[in-house]
Length: 379
Image (tube, rainbow, N blue to C red; front, side):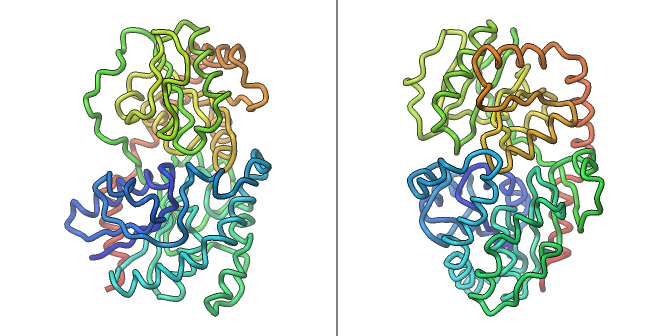
């Protein structure tokens, strides 16, 4: 069987797809990723074959591509990015994807939720089954449906498709990596959604951090590394708390530009599987991969959401008692230090994250997902 994966060019978009792609590879199936040309090396670095599709851009350089994005942080950022991607990316991306379909002849399409516009159009015009992987936002909720509709019809008309009906997102299956408690917060019927355990990668064996004293792992992921003020606040908060710290600043930053005491390491990147099992708390922006990795490792969080899905993730995590949320404007070193100390000392946060971890661990495995996708594939 052949499976075509569609991803936006950012690590937070790719990483939830990679374990599923590797599982299909291990089962003897062919996989191919379609991504923006500047991001192909990042995909292939994970051992995943990839081909260029759509305009050239990367999410960790979004400020250069769309400088107006600085005016659309916080609550209005999801709508801004959906509109922007549908205006500038979706139509040329679908044209390239159609060419790839002719050449690769996939039996099934797999896309992460931020690629849903292109993926759902491709599903209709090529008559191929589609699996969408959700992030923290539950599929089928009013907020996700509203987002899906922004700029959608102009893209559909470019391929002779009728306007979208404004109801369920057209896909054959949603794969969600969040546990059942996460979805039940909506108290609404959802479309076909199947929850699968998203595992951490195997540890590399790095000895960068020890577990002999409380460790705070702090990160803004791969896209929000331009928030230097917040990175410095993270470092200072850990210093004020007297904890061991590991802070990642992203591949586009020089770690040496951030001053820090010897008790804190500042690096561009570290595999989360090497640090999360040793962490006592995670300080982050609420990116999906970091948040789910922390839950999978049983570690409580302090979240400073900056935009996009982080807003939904932070709200959910706080409602479920696994995180404390600090708004960016209030994220001073002193406030962050207090919040970190609170979640590290809190029995309620520990119990909540352990309960959610147990739910996650009990969900179907990647091997189960492979079997289901193979059964769905078009022969």
